[in-house]
Image 1 (cartoon, one colour):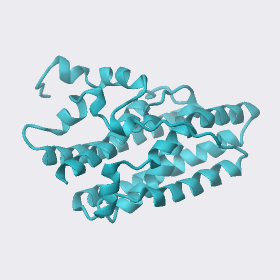
Image 2 (image 1 turned 180 degrees about the vertical axis):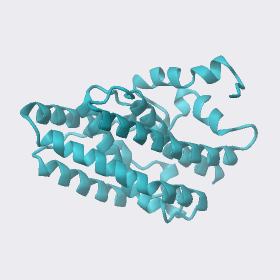
Image 3 (image 1 turned 90 degrees about the vertical axis):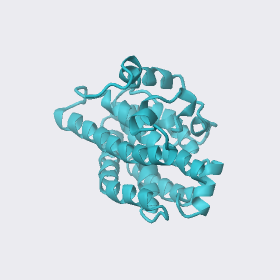
Image 4 (image 1 turned 120 degrees about the vertical axis):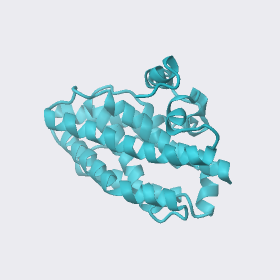
Length: 250
């Protein structure tokens, strides 16, 4: 059970870390100063959650494990994030679409985890929930702004959703570990999360005439450590300092 809890914490932390890294790549490249700062702050929020998750994971793993070794010294197949958060910053519509789809999942997930039987998961969720509500409000407003804006912005937002939405199936494809965590009260019920996700996404998209693709491809291996071509490039950036200068201290 301890090993399953460790793996579940990795799923939560890896999603936040990889998406946070994607957003960090945009620092200084936002469409305006306010949005640039907002995206950077969302990245920092996610990394704050990552630290809490990985500090807990290090306690569970024991030995010489630390939050840094868990974040930076695993092999690619040991990361448990979904494929959605790996997707590239193709353009601003893709950035917003990816963020919105993740936020629509993340918010009801953490709302459930605020009542987790695991006191540390509960504490992390309760500390993070206000940030996630802001993330969801920010991204949903931008989806409406782009979808209900010019013909160009509507087309770009629709193209981003066409590409990104199929990846959301993996968010709700329950692994054995997630099922075990649900059953013991420590994890979330993904069926309930999906109901909230569907309502949120459909409400926002319907408001501005955006449509969701019907075909749902099986992008569902990220939780098992099988990632897209993007992952290796990101890890080479994330892990460089720790691997080039082992045991470095600031």
